[in-house]
Image 1 (cartoon, rainbow, N blue to C red):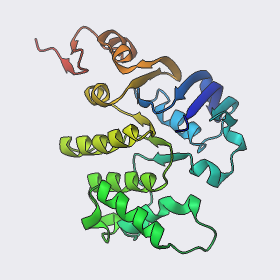
Image 2: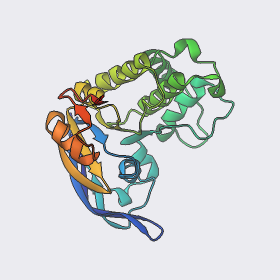
Image 3: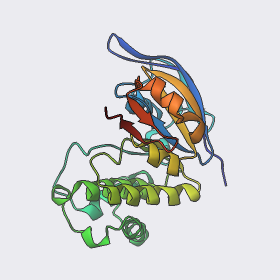
Length: 257
C-alpha cells in the first residue's frame, strides 16, 4: 500500500490585507486520523481549504506525496483528495443518488455517461452510509444528518486516499454523530487519511489517532491526540479560567457556585 503524505512548508495565506498564516509548517503522514481543533477563527477551515487547493497560498509550499500542490492537474488532485464541507451552500433539485455519482467525476471522460461499474460504486457507498432508502430523495428534502451522510458518500465515491472534513458533526444529534464517526473510522482502517475539524473533544479522543491544535493562525501542537488534548492545553488555547472543569476525557463544564 502506498503511504500518503502531506508536507506543509512555511505556508502563508492572506485575505486581502489581512494575514492569517505567516509561517505554518507540519506534516500529515500515512493513514493518520487527525482531529483539527481550536477556537473559532483560529484558521482551521482555511487550512483545510489550502490543503484541498480551494484557496491559493500567498507563500510557502504544500506538497502531496512529494509533489507541490500547484503542479497537480485538477482531476489528478481530485483522485487524491476529497472534501466534505460543513454545509452544502447550493441545494439543487437533484437526488441523493445523483449527488453521490458526482464523486466519480475525476474518473469520467468528458460527456461520458455513467456505466454499470459507476452504478455499482454509487450503490455501495449509499449502502455503507445508510442512504439506500433515500437514493431518490431530493437534497432539499433531507435532514441535516442525511445531508452530511450524502456529502460523505460523495467523497467516498471519489475513492481518494485523503479525505478532508470541515465540521461534519455540526448541528447533528448524538446518534448521527457517532454514525458518521464510525463510517470514517472504517475508512481510516482501510488506509484513508482523515483530517477532520472537530469541536467535540471527547469524540476526538475516542476516534482520532492525532490532533492538531490551532490558535490565531498558529499550530500550537500536532501530536498523538492524548498529548494534544490535555486539560492544560485546552485551558490555555481556549483561554478558560478556573471557573471551568476539564476532564482527561475532554469534557468541559462550568463550575457552579
